[in-house]
Length: 353
Image (tube, rainbow, N blue to C red; front, side):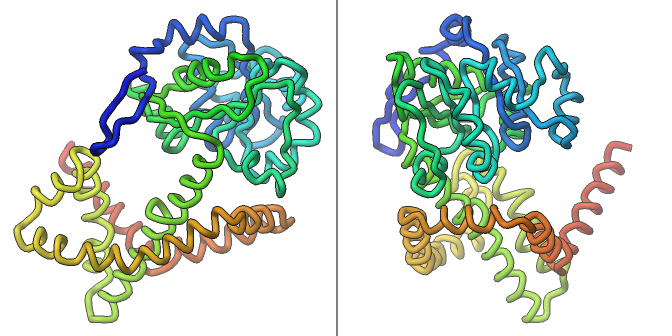
């Protein structure tokens, strides 16, 4: 393990130097890793583990779009691609990578295949942390572990193919065999993590739900809509409002932040922009702190879990979701965005030509 200074606070992390791939392969050499679900996280994790040399099989419902995607990715029916029940029966490490709603629906079936000594693996602490609502309560004679890549399965796969790795958290909820901690790390290395930091199931899901609803998605979408609306109401054109709200953010500023941090982004902007950002960031921080505290309280109380389960379990949820997304997609803001992206693509083609 390595101790790394994070902003003045030392934390212990696991890197590939301390736990190389060969060690992970040796540790899991007798295991069959069954990836249940082939939607958001499943493809990236399964393909990375397969390419790393682990014995991986996929469990998915035949005839679904995810089954077809698995076929295209080279999983072979009867050899590496099975029904969910067959994969769960064959697997010694069962990776439950279904959606939260899917995990709830499958649990009465899946628990029958979790025989003593097996391992139940998650990439999200939702089902275990909120088990008073999900009823996902594992037997005491199995290991229960978590590896949560800090990004989508698509990003995990892209970084892996490029030779990099997405950082991940890992946790042990239940150690029946005495080997759960090493097993979690080996799985984290196997799925292509850059480094691994230890957490617990509750902290993982609390931070994840807060992040998704906050800066990563909800707050970002909300503040983009607000600024676009202000600019349009003050007489600016759709293209100008979009460019100043979204295009510069995604194509210029966020890449600079990701490259070297917020100060680097500030340093590469005009003096006028720097001054304005430094003068106004505190006002935005103070304005949003109460909202983010309310959000965290809602997560910790289980209210966000309740709402997610309630909405996700309604028979017509998919249709309702598509209607909500369609409203976003067809709004002036994001219709303008589609046009801007098209122009960006044309410009790229002209440069290449």
